[in-house]
Picture 1: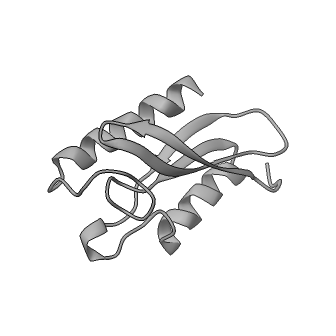
Picture 2: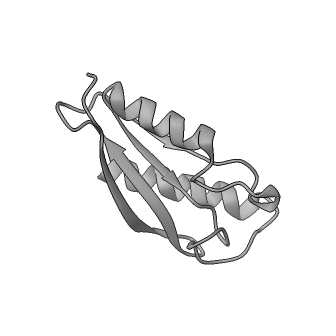
Picture 3: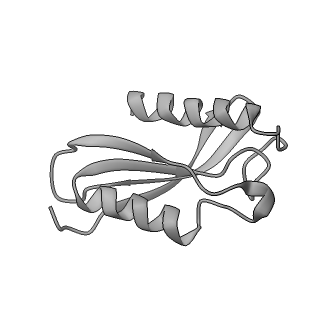
Length: 102
């Protein structure tokens, strides 16, 4: 499973509006599992483009997993506003729900 992952940019529905996302999955085989990758604290500059979040998602995809990373509400292209952690948990749950049905 060392193929080049396939990458799709998309917006998924979240509880406060759209969540800007990147979906990566193996380009050359079956999907063995799935992972939602969350970025560091958005109030301190964290986004889905963070080096660690990007590396984790790409590594999961290379190992045969589908990986979804997204920007929490109010971060870059995601709608809504920061909710002191409460709404961000809802965002992560919405991302996981989307991934389960995809």
